[in-house]
Image (cartoon, rainbow, N blue to C red; front, top):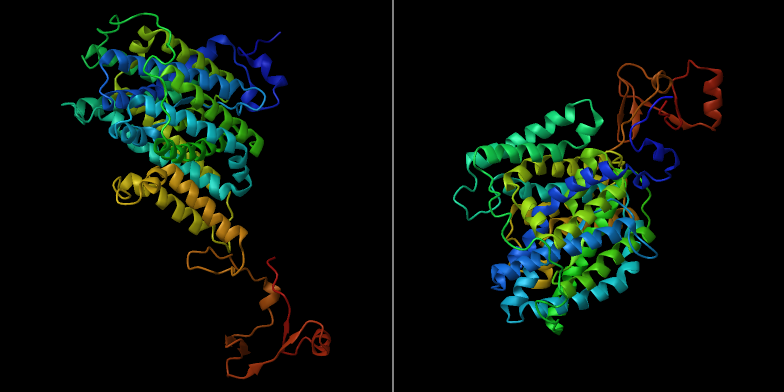
Length: 516
């Protein structure tokens, strides 16, 4: 009797790739890899908001614990799912960075955290109600749109990887130092070397192993500090409304509603992206269930001191890199996040991983997302249509806020909020241009732009066998070498029949040109 890899026995009955169960051990290991990948992003928002609100370190710690706790719960809802909730795909949930600017503006206007919490709850309720309507856009998302969105997701994340590789804190003295970038380069090299090893388990865990080795190296050279792990409580449960009872302000709710629309757009893009990577069917019902999980989690989050929840794009890249498509792996990551929220000491351990190490891994992760989008775009037909223009314009549009972050600062606030995200910018442009050129076809021609890729023309030998040297076309007419016009007749004309009987005649039969 031959042995099979652990978890292989489960694969024969799997109908969807994402339903594969690998066992407890591998699920925890791969789940931890997901947590390490997104940890820096999930704690960044409560850090920024806590500082903007002038909270003391202890209360900022409460915000961080709440973010981890709610991110874990939201991830479990999204991956495990239930009736009307959860897309059941390997998507990690966490605090959305898209809401940071709006929340800071609410705080600066004097509303404080209670007003932020109220705006999040009210806008998420509206987002929950419109989720089924929003999900119907799936029919307007062919590969030319989804490929563009996935590619843009990867490209917009690259500045994040570079920032991490430089040290993460732009105010630090060693930000951008050769030491930080060198540590990131070491981690990147480890990821590549471990990925090349023929052992599947090692290759799949290349990101996690590279982070562990990179962190150990950082400890040896004095670039990692674990001395503060023992500071603070070991166990703490998020207390409802510990940072204030929500206050509902109309202006704050309206501004946050714009953010919710952006989050719905980004989560839809992430669901489609991970569906493409996993190679599973994603329809409007599945998107609606995923969006409801997003918004439902966002409604509950302020109760425990957290904010709007959304899918994390960087973890989509991890799915692509490792090839581990199981949603139960990400669910294990959700359990780890919940424990981190309940056990602050574990969170402090993970937080001690140098940001430069995350940057080295992020270069591979985020680049893989872009590569997955390019692979999807390779399936698109560019012949005699405007698809090339759709891709070019949409990706360029998505890169504007990345290349020039202040580009929209003089636009209305609602406009800046929506288009400051490169992902939502590219998604909106790709959908609109696809509607314009591929659905509203009035006025389209097969050569409507200099950017259109025309079909290659092929003539068979039999089509040109009756031509003589020097024959040429001029103004739609055929002339011989001496300038005499050669008649062109239709296939079914009497002359064509006579030509068939007397092949020595030089008239050209007007027949469709075959492509072979």
